[in-house]
Image 1: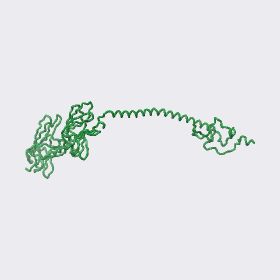
Image 2 (image 1 turned 180 degrees about the horizontal axis):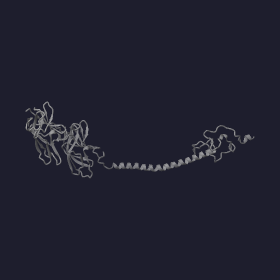
Image 3 (image 1 turned 180 degrees about the vertical axis):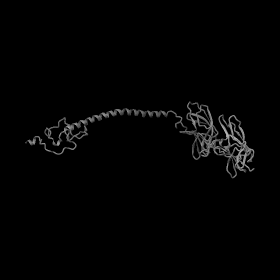
Amino acid sequence: MGWLFGKKDDALYRGDAPASAPGLDGVQPSAYQGNAAGRPYDPIPVETPSPYPTAGTPNPYPTAGLPPEFAAVMAAAAAQQRVIKRSVGRSLFAVLLPLLLVGGLVVVGFVAFDNLRHEFVNPFSSDSAPGEPFQGVVGTAGDVTLGENSYQITIESATAQPSAAWGSYSAPVSGGFLVVELSLTRTDTNASVSQISWFDWTFTSESQAAVGGELIAGGYEPLLSTLNLATGESATGLVAFDTLAAVGTLALETYDGAWAQWPITAATPGVLAGELGVPVHPEAARAAFSATVANPRWIAAGDPAAWIDPASGTYLVLDLSVTLDEGALTATSSLSVGYDNWQFTPDGGVAVASFFGVTGADSLGFSAGQPTTAGTLIAFDAPRGPGTLSLVNGDGSVLAVWVIPAL
């Protein structure tokens, strides 16, 4: 009857060992081992780990069917891993908690600073910009607020110039310069100063094309490039725009918008038709002088006055007198009327510049402290006949013309 109740330890083969549990350190696979020492109904020893993980103690490693020694090693590793996870979790929490607290304080600080900032007036913020810009009238002084400062501004005049200033070779890109003359006085007593620069002025034409002020505008002076006026201080000068437009809106503005506006209808100077023997003051280019040409005459090659023989066979010679405007020059400025400023165009022919081949023909130059009136001769190597005499600016634009009759 021993076969009913006794051990069965016949070392018979009972199937292949599980693929996941080969022998460990020489221990035979369970398929070749004998039964455990206890009876089949004996309880599992307490020290033997359960091969089945429980809900309360998760076991990520399957131990069913493993040798007791190997199962014990794996269970110990799992327990150690749980301890490590708990330690790492506590460490991460300890590190992240201060960071989260600091981040929260920073956010709260930014919010508080932003709220406090809005309690103060920033002179260049949209909070303090006027709801409606000052609407001025050309020729009338107006009180204009700019940030924390106040100014009395007068737009004196506006001119749509077809050329650069007299003597300048910088022709306008657009074909013209809008030149605005203005004066302003600071009237407030605040400590802060609102700088006014050339780019704070804009001009918008009727077609809504907006242009900014020019730092260098074809030689027009004095340009109000940058102003930092003290209380009671005044400035008078020009702002200029490279545009052909003569009608539109002038504005003083910052990046927040316009602080003042003036409707502009600019005068447009034309080419003057001169009369021989009568002074002519050019309207364009802000030429600060009057010119009188008179006594046209022709001299031929061999004339004692022609010290260089004319290629055309004759010279057209005229008397020229130039008178400067009062206050035209400063202590450091000068003005000249040279050979290139005069042209003669024979009827049906090509323009010819004045030439120094006649005795007494010269250019005129003026400087501070010198006489404001000077005379010379102008001569042209051209075939005898009628034509047109022209006063020409440095950029090639014509300012005045005279008809030269046949003589």
